[in-house]
Amino acid sequence: MTYRALLLTDTPEFSAQVTELDTLPEGDVELHIDYATLNYKDALAITNKSPIVRTWPMVAGIDAAGVVAHSTHAAFQPGDAVVLNGWGLSETRWGGLAQRTRAPGDWLVKLPARSSRSPGRPKNDLAPSGGGSDVFSEPGAQMSPRDAAAIGTAGYTAALCVQALERHGLTPADGPILVTGATGGVGSIAVALLARAGFEVHALTGKAADHAYLKSLGAAEVLDRADFAAPGKPMQKERFAGVVDVLGSQVLVNACAQVKRNGAVAACGLAMGMDFPASVAPFILRGISLYGIDSVYASLARRQAAWTLLAERLTSADLAGIAHEIALSETLPAAEKMLAGQMTGRFVVDVNR
Ligand SMILES: NC(=O)c1ccc[n+]([C@@H]2O[C@H](COP(=O)([O-])OP(=O)(O)OC[C@H]3O[C@@H](n4cnc5c(N)ncnc54)[C@H](OP(=O)(O)O)[C@@H]3O)[C@@H](O)[C@H]2O)c1
Image (tube, rainbow, N blue to C red):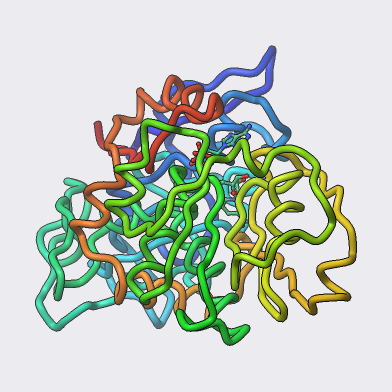
C-alpha cells in the first residue's frame, strides 16, 4: 500500500516534496501516523539550512504520533496510541512527516493514560479501530496523538529540562526560573510546565507582541531578550534559581551569570548560536550546575517519565493555545517562518491532509 510522505532528496540537487512511497523502514512495530510536528530541527532539515540529514533520500520529521497497526513486539498491540521521538529520525532513519512508518518497539512510548476512559476512534482511516483520537484529549482522558504531537520533541525536551532542574532539587521556594526563547516550542511548554508546578517563571522573549501569550501560559514576568544579548560581567546580580535555555551563545552566558548560588541551568538549544563564550566564575564561585539535555538518545525510562509529567501537568486547553495545525503540504513555508524566528507556539502537522 502506498502512503504520502515529505521526502528530502539530494540528487540532482536538494528538494523537499510530498511524495507517494511504497516501502517502510525496518522495525517490529508498524504505525499509522495521525500527526507529526514541525520542530526547529525539522525546519533546518527541510530547508536544507543545516546538515541534519545524513542518509538520502530521507523522510523528514523527528516526531510521529499515531496508533499501532501491526506489532510483533510483546509490549504493543494494534490500536495502542504511541509517540515516537528522536532516535535518529530524519537523520539516519526515515521520519514522521508521513502517513505510515515502522520502528523498533523499544523506541516507542505509549501515550500516558490520564484516566481509564477509553480513547476515541483513530483519525487515520488506515488504522484499526480502538486507539488514538483526532481531537485534543480532555483532562482525565488518555493523551491523544494530537496532544502528543502538539507537545512533540520540543515539549518532551522541555519536560527533560524541567526534570533536570527538579532532580537538582529546585523547588518554587528557591526563586524564579528563567525560560529563554519563551515563545518557541520548547520555551512555551517549559513555561507552562514550570508554572503548573508553582514556579515563578520569568519568560525571555524577543517578541514584544507576545507578552499576553506568555502570561496566559503562566509566566509571572516577561523579560526582553535584548537585555541578555550583549556581553556582560562574568558574575552579575543573582536573580534566578534556575534556567531553561534554548538559545545558547551570549544569552546562555548572561543567564548563567545571573543564577543564584547552587542553582542550575538546563541547556538544550542553539537557536541564537552554538558558541558559549562564558567564564567559569559562576560555576566555581557560586557552585552553579549546567545540565546538557539530549532528547534524541534519552533512555526509554527518561522518556516515559517525561511523557508522564507532560500528561500530569498539561491540559488539552493548554495545548490548544500553543498548537497551530497545518497540512503536510504546508510544512515548507511554515519551516521558513520558524527559522525566521516568527513562530509563536508549535506547528502540528496533520499528515493525512
Ligand atoms: N537538545 C535537544 O534534544 C533539543 C530538542 C529540541 C529542541 N532543541 C533545540 O532547542 C532550540 C529551540 O527549539 P524550538 O523547537 O523551541 O524552536 P522554536 O520553536 O523555533 O523556538 C525558538 C525560539 O528562540 C527564539 N529565537 C529564534 N531565533 C533566534 C535567534 N536567531 N536569536 C535569538 N533568539 C531566537 C524565539 O523565541 P523568542 O522570540 O520568544 O525569544 C523562538 O521562538 C533549537 O535550537 C533546537 O534545535 C534541542
